[in-house]
Length: 154
Image 1 (spheres, rainbow, N blue to C red):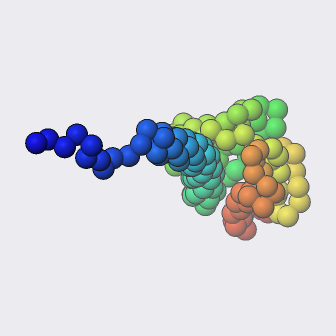
Image 2 (cartoon, helix red, strand yellow):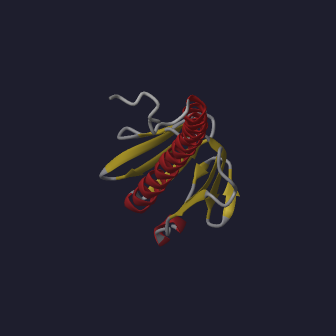
């Protein structure tokens, strides 16, 4: 004889619905947190790329300042010209980048100060440059200088 009143162990529909609702809330929170983390990672990546660009510009300027014997700043054309008997290099400053014949640096300069023998100059011969940039604090700046050859006074 078959017993039709035997109870089957199972979850009720209410219990299943509660688990599904709680799971949906947890998954929704996880996706929103994932979105926040992705935005932060993107921001960190952009900052790292910008800092790397600034560092590569500083390295290039330092190498060129110490390779070439003469450094001239043309304020009217916004061109930094480095030259020696063996060659020449130009840094062209535009509103949103600095370009040379070798590379382009996609960084915006906030201010450019040029010096010759410790005195600030607006144009002509220089031996030091101080650059500050947009999207950075004043602590993040580039200062590049060269030691002058004593023959410049003769």
